[in-house]
Length: 447
Image (cartoon, rainbow, N blue to C red; front, side, top):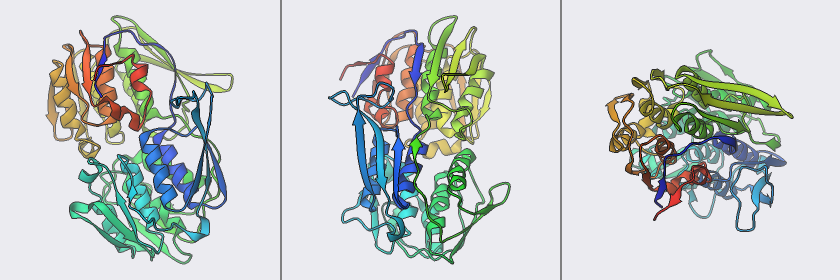
């Protein structure tokens, strides 16, 4: 799908959809756990649906509840109803079962890595596959760690799908290098459910995206799961024999998704932009991508939290020009596309560093953002670990989202600050995490 976005002012009240990271963790834990969980306002996106399909394949019973709920940020169906809740009956002590057909994770790397470890708890063989992008993303370090824990593993070359895993999980001590934090989260979520008497020890010589580990550990803490770790997260020890209790309540809003309407507000217009008021977020949430608001503040924007009628509101605006700067994205590489667009609209030079792992996401986001912003007249130079962007020359044109939801949304935001309309190919991929985003940006479908 191709969309056309014309430069315009963006402001108003936006309810942010649920966090993909929270949604997938809750869904997997509920599916592996005991009893029945009621997960309110989960993210309704392609990635979340892929995760639900995989969880059903592993033995969970998941029921969707839809209603005409105007508060829910999920997209409405043809009847005007939205996904408002999942009821999940977990596999419990029976453990994950093997699916008769391969488990298709679609475009969801989070689902692939976390579900691989979950399926490795079962004694039957489970096979995973995915789309073309997933087929290019290897899971070698995770698969090697699973082998070290006694799991039988096979895969295509480079640790790519199709990947098969089969327990038992015997425990032991393994070394796991984590260019993506999802490898470590996968073991941390599965290890407590290994048989009683087993102990999983993990040495972590490299860890990127540390805040996502904080997010995973916050779930283990709520569940009363014991573990030990060093202060720098270079070592973990997790005993088996645990169980997950039901997870109930609404899913928190997604700071990763919130970055895009926030950036749209501050780059649109000429002198004074915004405000945008973002609902559904929690300032105390451990999601690392809330760092986007620190970046915005450093670039000259105003960000303010307030609480009204029991709900947090985040107001984002600017009164002067955006200022370039140097930003370390090691903990938050998913912010690179949005931060690159901010740099393209800022005065001076913006340098994004320490984010080499952004090259192993759905696309090589460093190379892709350099290429596509270049088509819009922006002076961009690649570094091995990031980008150097000279702001001030953003014009209209035709660009390609490369099938990457964050790239598509970043380019849509860039269009608001361009001197002319921007046509974006592959815009359907925004539905991976934010199905309503093209509509939010007043996009016109043109093919």
